[in-house]
Length: 253
Image 1: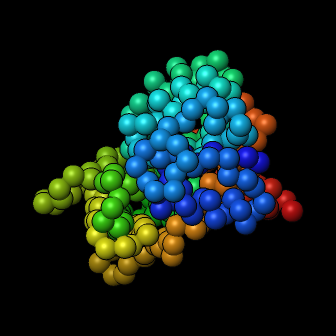
Image 2 (image 1 turned 60 degrees about the vertical axis):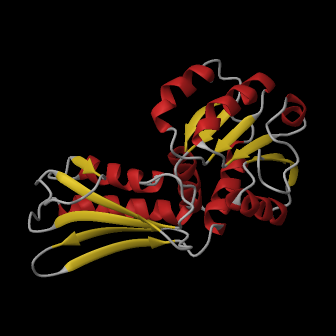
């Protein structure tokens, strides 16, 4: 595949490495400020010279880039977070189904295994009211969104399956939680690639589920695999569609 990388920061550079390792070609590196970029924005010329785009840009740029992709028929995998409140607007842009468009907060295969384990743990704990649920995440100091998309996904998984925790609270946690509140804290600092923890805690013991990224490589690999999966497809997809297919395929292999 010829892939246009939209956003040539740390994640874009990791994606480039994985693309080359898997035998793909980078058609262009697009970024308004980063050194090494070939262009400041996605142009029609770049789009038409590419088979697919992989985007790790800024939330403010996602809709504009989606319009450019639709205009030129370029499918895209989007790992940018912080824009999901505009999903309805995105759906209008993609309404004609001309391209394949896959988005998600986390493309790490390991993170999705973690989500599945967390979902099972919450359901197993439902008959056990002595276990309270809480969570936290840590990311490097340059991470712009807080809480992260991954943290919000985990929190939604918990509240969607818990019979007691139905509300997510992520703002300043300077009070005791209400019985139906899942308190989820976010910390930013240092060079931490990303750690997410779900705690099931009782008077007698603690069960801790943690996904700890060692580097951005796992996110980049998952994104490139998602682009390979999306090739030839049309329509709007969420990362779980991709994950479901590859995990089912690997179980059946």
